[in-house]
Length: 228
Image (cartoon, rainbow, N blue to C red; front, side, top):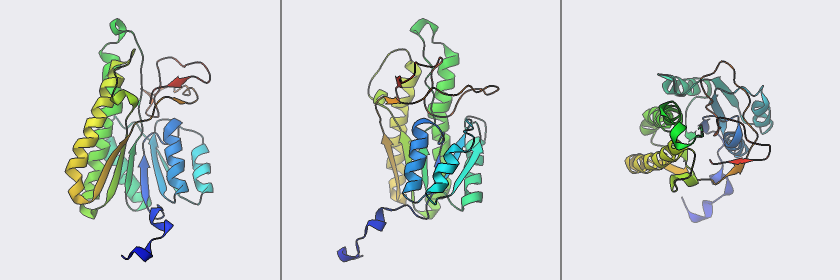
C-alpha cells in the first residue's frame, strides 16, 4: 500500500460483523449505534427486549441487526451466541463486552449473592465471550475485542465491592488477552467511561438478572448517574 492510497474508507466498518452484549440498552445501545453508523452489522444478545427500538434505529443506517434473547451467564450460552452470530451474519469480527450489573449495598449487607451475580455477569461472561470469539478470530487472523472497563477499574468506590473488583479484573483480562492475541493480528482494548446518565432499567419479571448496562438493586431518581 502506498501513502497515496489512503482514503477515509479505511476507517469504515462496512462488511464487518459485531457482537455487543447488552447492546440494546444504555451504553450498549450507544455502542451498537456507533458500529452501525460506521457500517457494521450488529448481533445483540441481551435479556432485555426493547420491542424492536434498537433494530429500527440500526436498520435506518442501512446495517443489519440481529437479536438473541439470552442470559450470557448461562452454561454454554456464550458459545451459542457466537455460533448464532456466525450462522446469521457469516462471521464475527468485533466483540464489545458491554453487559454489566452493579448491585449496591453497605459492607455488612453485601454478601455472596450480590458478589456472585456481579462476577458472573461482569467478569466470567466477558471472559467466556472473549474465549469463544477467539476460537474464530485466531484462524481468520483478524478481530477486535473491546472490554468496557470503568473509572472503578482504577478506584475503590463505595457500596459495591464486587463492581470495583470485577472492573479491576476486566482491565487485567484486557491486558492479558492483548498480550496473547497480538501475534494473531487481534487487537484487544478497554474503554473506561466515567459516570453517564441513562434511564432506569425496565422491570424484568421472570428473569434472574439483567445483562444489559449497569443496573442497581433499586432504580435511581430520574436523571441520576451510575458508574460504568
